[in-house]
Image 1 (spheres, one colour):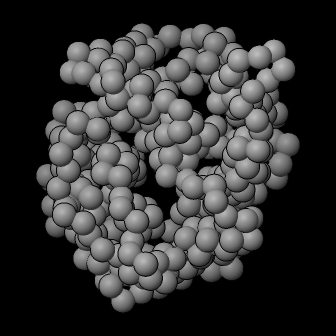
Image 2 (cartoon, rainbow, N blue to C red; image 1 turned 135 degrees about the vertical axis):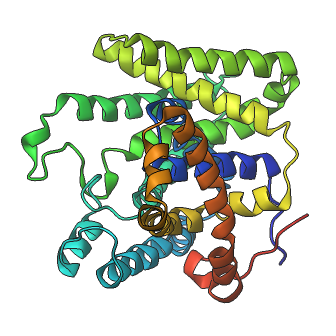
Image 3 (tube, rainbow, N blue to C red; image 1 turned 180 degrees about the vertical axis):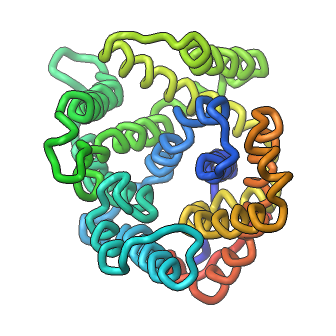
Amino acid sequence: MGQAKRIEWVDIVKYVCIIMVMLSHLETRTEIWSAFYTPFFLSAFFFAAGYVYKPNNSFGVFLDKKIRQLFMPWLVFSVFDIVLSQIITFNEHDSLLEELKWNFLQIRGQGDQIWFVAALFVAFIPFYFFIRFYESKPQKINGGGYCNKCVVAIALAWLLSFSSILYTRLVPADIFPWNTTSLPWHIEYMFQAMFYMVLGYMFRHNMEAEFDKYNTLKLRIVALLAYLVLVFVPFFGKVKVPMVGDILYHYLTVVVGIATLILIAKEIKANRYINYVGQNTLIYFALHGKALSVIQTLLKKFAVGFYSAVLNNVALSSVFCLGLSLVLSVILIVPTYIINRWFPFIVGRKSIKIEK
């Protein structure tokens, strides 16, 4: 069977987000850049995962697919990176066994290599059962008429997500030996991720047609301005609000950020480069860290004066870090092509075809 036709705007969204991921790991990043991309750049990945999900398989088939496409790539890339770091390193490292231990525990911030892939794998499990339950419910309710059950589903997913955030805010950080509220395998995060996956699924099946009707230049400008206001008014004003208000404000900012990104992505004409990066974000997520370490080490060794000037100048650093992320996205095409061409099983693929 041929490869399913890809949805171009989804790949554009994933392209933008993976550029932001690389940007977030650079030494040259600035607080302004971070304030801009932090609300949406990971949540949009979860949204996209929910959007493209097709609930047609038994749990066994579903789990087998996710093990091949997410768990095995996480396992191969994370262990490879740890072993390689023990041989060729640019930073201080613990022993091999110690790093492997924390990697397999997958506790956020505790040596959790390629954590996002592991978190996505875990979030897919409750998402599977949530969507299966949702699709099993009838359209009508006793009161007559049609119940917009997607609204109820979104509300329920949000309540689970909200409860997860309350856990991270209210439980003392020193309750565990690692001094954070994070749980092994990102269990405390899975419902936060699942909420945006549910949003993506509901968007495709219940909202997208209406959304597209109103996707005008005026709306895109208004949405972008609204997002910038939501992000930067608290940033520059150092506004502090009560905990619940802060959580609700965060949700609003994330949703507006994702919506704005989709509005713009649907109007962009992609090229082969954007499409290629967008459909290979898992490989980019796995490989970019080591590549960045190499590049930044070389800059410190052979261009220390220039690099120091960049790090100490906000404007120059902001431009340089974006440019470096784009350059890195081009460099990583080579190992990505090698993996897709000769080792596609690593990422759960038989082969990959780049569409024009």
